[in-house]
Length: 555
Image 1 (cartoon, rainbow, N blue to C red):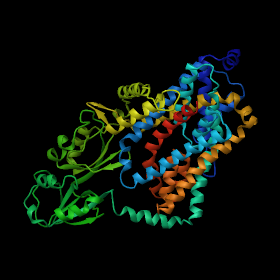
Image 2 (cartoon, one colour):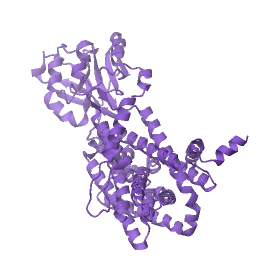
Image 3 (cartoon, rainbow, N blue to C red):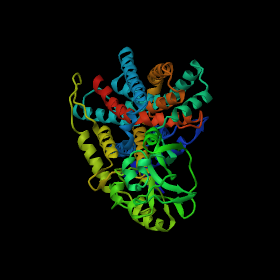
Image 4 (cartoon, rainbow, N blue to C red):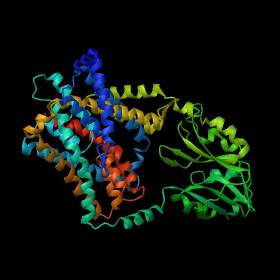
């Protein structure tokens, strides 16, 4: 049994990997424990690493550094691919205003951190770690650590200690989460918000649309009588998807050569914003009149797993021309897409097909709908995207007033490239889409590796640092969290922004899932999650950029 003692007492590669795995296992379990509605979440890994290091865990410094940086790269790349498809669309509608509020929170916290540094003479690496913990943003911490490591490599005698980054982060993180929730509670109390009223207001705002609706259209435009469905589809392609035709109580498949007659009822799908145009072009439109699919018609849902058709438009795919069936909805990355002729099909899309029962097996075979094929990871685009991200992250750019050139680094470069690739979807025949299961594994593995290494690296000095005055770091972190949130939250409420959206963009501006979980617990609506998702992509990018900007400014 001596070899076990030697293993835990050594500092070789096997020992380092062992401690990383133990930290990840215990930390994830610790993060699932809850006090009320509050959990440590993934930060449990960080605190487990600190505890193990405090009690003497040994490790190889180079191995720990590699695992930390590689974990960070995997984490931010997975985030970018996930948020990329909706990154630019978040600026539409009230998403623009919500992003303005989120930007104010981000730069407000940055300003408070700068003020604390100059007023209380807090060391650059300490205040940067505190800021990252106060805003509960781990990638920002990773970006800052890389800047410090690069600076120390070039200036080995500099008065910097990168372990203070992790210590500051760990001390500020718990009150960072609590500060977000406290801000939500105070805004609610100060403005005497009543949740049921906010729910009603939000639901009323949805009636104006930007969501897909089941519709029934009675064609009264005489110019369309005797015309084929193919002709009418070209007329309303961006506004209506045909599901089936009701004629004399019987449901028929709207194939391309189907001729429309007076009295026909078109059952289909449309964006709520298109209803008025449909009434002008076609006739009377009733919203939400969804009829059951019966007779010899069926409705099926298939997943696109056939890589040969990925990137094709629905016009090129030609389902509605070759089969008595039609694709009526596309579900992609958590969103519904209205399928027009120019809509492209991507691997991972879920499509709803309405048509004759006997052709469904053929359509399924053509689309794929194979779980085994879908589960197989697409490795080449992953490593190509990371490689491009590393190249972009290594490009230096000069900002006046900074002592060294800034770089997007190992965090910002892969994040930027993954957002662009996720938004673009594909380049030529190469698809960069990642299924949700693979994305989740990549993201969780990356963040656990990163936080485990940060905790192990910072734990040796953590307790002594706290006793030597580090307890003040908790107060500094709370100020960075609370001051921008309460000010921006109050301004948003004065501007009559729905309180549920305020809670959502508060959590999103701090990139904090536990705070979102608390907000979602207020009521069962999508307002909080929608606002969170609207501001999250831009906020994450800014947090990573400002994490390294702060340390560069103060060096």
